[in-house]
Length: 189
Image (cartoon, rainbow, N blue to C red; front, side):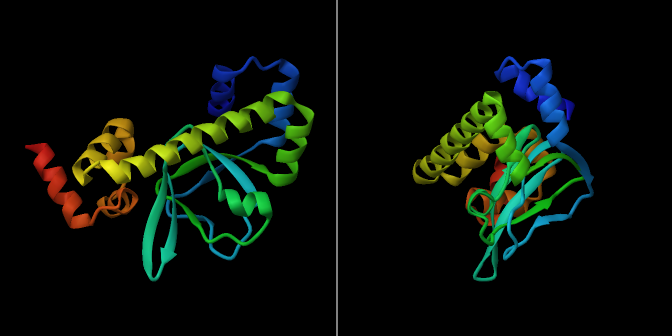
């Protein structure tokens, strides 16, 4: 919880009353590695803040697992379409490492959004940051080589580059695992 409150405090002035309200509606959970948080066909009921650990979000597309999200510490994640529309998700979310998550249910999320402008502003800020990242990722796929995408990933997320399997990183970057292994060997020399 402390990491999330620090995250919020770096962006907004938060009164003691609002902090107490946040602590009332946010829940901290410890989850072991390789735990599925969401599976296709289920409705996403929570928004999560990853306080510690690594999470991946992926889909099974024609029998192939396609990693669409590698979530670093101190970031939010959810199956947004499912959470907002309360429809079944097509996503999997799974912990890669042991994780500490702060979660909020949809009813509590709405309650906070209606009762404190800070929460609404935080949601808007995080949504805009995630949208910018998605747009940049699309642009990277269009203009960067596989090696350039990996170098950028390694630079932006060194902890993920060290702690996530080659298969997951390769899928996230749209590179064959064998090609990523060759790229990593070239960089090492």
